[in-house]
Amino acid sequence: MRRSAVPYTRRVSIGPAPILALLVGGLNASIFMVWRGRGGARLLIIFLAAALGAWAGDATGGRLGVDPFKVGDFHLIAASVVAWAGIGFVEVLSILGPTTRPADQRE
Image (tube, rainbow, N blue to C red):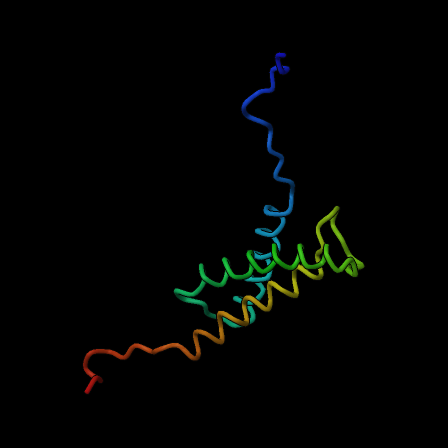
């Protein structure tokens, strides 16, 4: 008995969630940078935290199903809330983390 020929590779559809998460995370990180006035070296880390938070917020909003404002299947309010939580987490870590002092001020 011979099986039907099934192609080894299958098409994988990613969907719009990662792309929209990058856009929402970038928008929230930009709003934070305008509000804060400076970001310095933390800009990339803040962007990554916001984008990953937006992606996680979309997944959480999809599980809870309570988001009244969606763009397609993307839960915008939940994504923005968790993106801001990610930004806040990075800021708290930067405040609590070690600080570097110039060499002339070290003991």
